[in-house]
Amino acid sequence: MRTDLLSRARGGDGEAFRALTEPHRRELQVHCYRMLGSFQDAEDALQDTMLAAWRGLERFDGRASLRTWLYRIATNRCLDALRSARRRPAQQWDVPGIDLPEPTGLGEIHWLEPYPDALLDGAISVPLGPEARYEQTESISLAFVTALQILPPRQLAVLILRDVLGFHANEVADMLDTTVESVKSALKRARAGMQDRLPVTTDPRPPADSPAEDAIVAKFVTAYESADIEALVALLTDDVFMSMPPIPLEYRGRDLVTRFLTLVFDSAHRFELLPTRANGQPAFAVYRHPSLGAHGSGLFVLTLTGDRISAMTRFENTVLPTFGLPQSLPGA
Image 1: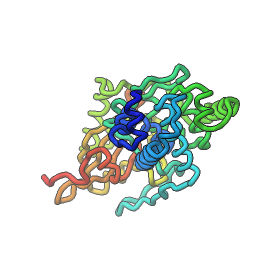
Image 2: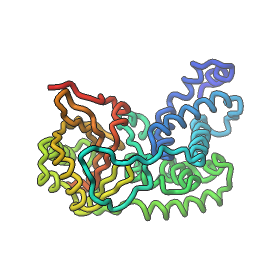
Image 3: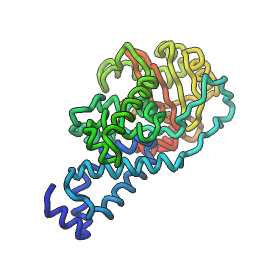
Image 4: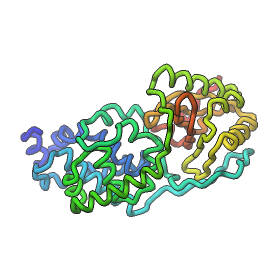
């Protein structure tokens, strides 16, 4: 870190402050997203972090790196947000003409939002500490982020800092104003909690943008746009899981998911899909075709296992602008 930049920033030079912090901004946003599970909440926490860093720069003593100091601020801002319990409320299914089957269960993490892959560039390729246990792509997946949200806040923070980012136990203890023994205890409990929540798969998902992934995606698009239920169901695993935050309804198993999809296609709508990527996974904006153009009805994120789809997560159309996607397509 350049001493002159730090000196100028402490003197109130905003450009110098941005030069110091901008290299860390994207990775801090991803950190906040992992902790909060919501893109919007992560953006709010990041803004709070930068404001706190700007106001508190005089207290940065240089004993730790600036990056570590910023992670300390961001982690504690996220913990404050988690403790305040200011979460967006669950929503009810309100699509007219479609009465859904009885769900398998009700999801606990209805505030979950997707994270655009376009914003991951430079954010998950950061150098990790020697204690990191997870691949960066794995630790941004929807399944991983969802499992994190079940953990108590302190355990959540410790697991991300230790197992995802690889900070040493003493660094984490300093960030959280606690002891190394407390960090080790929280990490042990967090690991057990994650082991209980993360799905166990025998077939790995195909690499991103690989021919294997492209083949599954192409079949899904063709089947969905042509309302070919039989072809669509053939792509699903037997235990396929479907969720739709902020609506808490969840469906597990091919039969229930098939019933859901049949109701959607029986509503006489036809759809067009625009590809994107979220959380390191293939995703699609779904547009419903009325007579005056195609209105966005939501965003699907697919989880692939082997050569099948093991999970489908549907988000509301309010997330489309985050991905740079329009709310409607021009009429044909």
